[in-house]
Amino acid sequence: MKAGYVLSGEHKELPYGELKALFEIFNCKGRVERFDRYVVADGDEELIRKIVKRGGYINEGHLCLFEYDIGEFNEDNIENFVKEFENFANNNELPIDEKDTFAVRVLKLYKTDAINSMDIERKIGHIIKTKTNAKVNLSKPDKLVRVVILDGKIFVGILIEQRDREYFQKNRPHLRKYFHPGCILPKLARAMVNLARVKENDIVLDPFCGTGGFLIEAGLMGCRLIGSDIDWRMASGTLINLESYNLTDKVIAVEKWDAKDVKKFLEKLGIDEVDAIITDPPYGISTSRKGDVENYLKEFKDILKEGGYLVFAAPRKIDIDMDLREIYDVYVHSQLTRYIHVYRK
Image 1 (tube, rainbow, N blue to C red):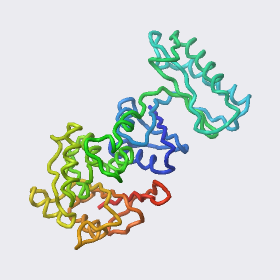
Image 2 (cartoon, rainbow, N blue to C red):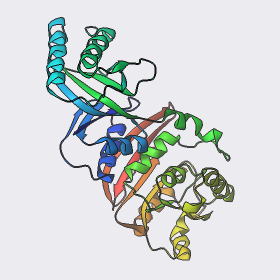
Image 3 (cartoon, one colour):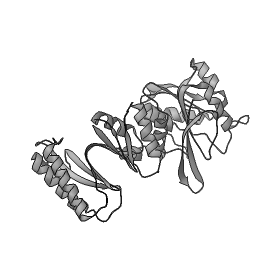
Image 4 (cartoon, rainbow, N blue to C red):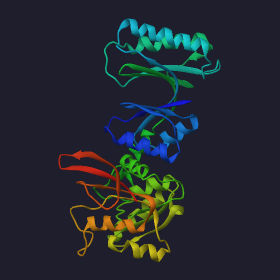
């Protein structure tokens, strides 16, 4: 089976980078085809649900039914597409039963005035209704059929999962129990955790934990959590926030420590290395009078397991002695662009 994923348009490359990381996490192998904001790969319903639910920048996941190379969008080619889909429907079982209700919705990921969305929805809906005897329900269908319009291509699929937009709205940093300005938004925090390729029960460290945004997202994925901050108020606030998300059982420790002493912190916990380090260092200030943030980042290699990932944000590109797998520039405002670094040991 083929799965189709709709990427967020908020950033050109970061959503695809996150999706590729999720493919690795869930051991998804096989051919991957990218059509700008639409990505097609091997996958069943279970995998689609896992990927979209865990993703930050993955808008939707579809079970692909039909693919058509339309070339130029004109009246004749659109009519040929409808005829080819009708032939497909007549010769294949559709995953819509007579007892189901359904609706057809066009999603334009390529701008063209040649497509009349309502006309396509009506024609494809008529074909499906004739084939299955299922009833149309435009407001709350059991099955939503997606017609995805791309540059020279059309996919038809069944919507399996959508991103939980409400979660990201309700969990913005200023709505947490403890808040401090300058936090990374939960959508980006989740994507950075995914870029670290962490799995359930992995140990995740944030040595500049702030109010705990990365630890919250990692904890919701089932990871074990270690956090530290030179400011005791931040460490305490992180614990308050983790408790509010019912993640206390995932916490190994969150304490006041200077990042330069994080190795001693781990030794105190009886831990030699961690599976991933995900952090947003406080650039513009020193974490202590004795050290420099970039030096700490370079030293974190010593506490990271072989094959583990160090993912961090910085206001400029930082070179450290590890394998730089990816880097993404995320515009925040006129005074700040965050560079998301993905290093692998």
